[in-house]
Image (cartoon, rainbow, N blue to C red):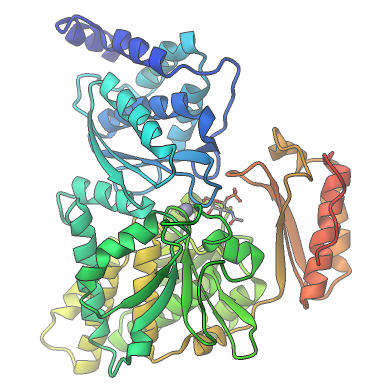
Length: 555
Ligand code: NG1
Ligand code: ZN
């Protein structure tokens, strides 16, 4: 019925909606036979293959908007991938990743051959009983990749082909776009849906929070930032004035010279376990790296002996959850706090959180959507992937209790102070998705309030040495999803290898964002972790039909 209504409405303008879609689709044709899968975080591959995908995701966003009667977001980015790749992520009304039920529709539209597109659209419309007469609105953002310009235009074409209103924000970090969508759909209660609105909200919360930290020295206010030559660098520069010198930074890899994510950025630093190129670090200086769309952050420093120390998502989760737990105790609030991790979390972090901090820990599948959902089950859910993507979610009830306490005239100073800190902390956090800028400011504030140096933070627990390998030569990943996990005997072989090492753990999974298989190993020493990672990749190579030469030992 909804389909008929769509046809009737559009007839007045001369062209039916579907005729319009067909016409525009001809400008964004799909290469026949090309099949792309919705990965860990949307579609992601070489930018040359993505024009039709972008157009069709514009269509899907318009449908999702009609379906939810709310504004939907579309972000054009490939995050930590190399510059020649690109990708697209859809944002649901409250600023979260698009619901998993719609990933199926995304795949359906993406892979429909040119002549089957209208039928695929009709299927979605019918299955969701979408009223095509409903108004629709889509927010669009893009990262700094050269290909993002024309690809975001393709998204806009898709949006307007279905008569939806498209608002193109141009260059934004991924978390900024999530923020805008949430602001819009909460009628401004979450903040103002503009770039300045974002900077103002976060900067004000940061300034309020750091008032609670006494005697901050200039050194404590200063951080070295690696912008991965991406959008995060641009955003941070724009934010500078709003921070009123309460936070100062030296920005490296700001995109003026280097290539996006090349030898720099959070993913490079985490996987290679070494500092990015292009950052001038002195011993003991606090440094951080964003990834290509600024939704991940990792910290690090070199000690006086020149040794590199990485503080990844696990260390960040520990710092933040410890801080929050202490505040809850001071405020006398019995709210349940939990940390959500993935299999990539260092074994030491899990042990520390459970045994020493007595915080509940949940382990979920890789991918932000899985962490986000699990975190929503608690009063306060702190979620971080080891790679530095994460945030904190406060349930509505928790937020209300904190607000009531902060304005309660009958409580003592200690409780009032803790409640105010919690309130400002909530305002500083981007609860829609992991946000490098918001996380960075929160970490800076927590270190200042607790009077911790980066060395003291690092010493909270010691990481088990670990190694992550991803090798394009090792395996042909066109259908790696099965070949990496199902060859008979692979898991048994890994189990046998793990037994050879002390305190060890290892697993493999196909990446959902790159054409690789990821191998993770940890053990009691770096030599053992490296050796185990190598042995497991050889097992994958032999049992899962690797291509190219056999993987070589690490170091
Ligand atoms: P894949 O490529 O599926 O491993 C990577 C990260 C995920 C997530 C996505 C989205 C690792 C091991 N994997 O996914 O955690 O962040 O990218 O960006 O870090
Ligand atoms: Zn990212």
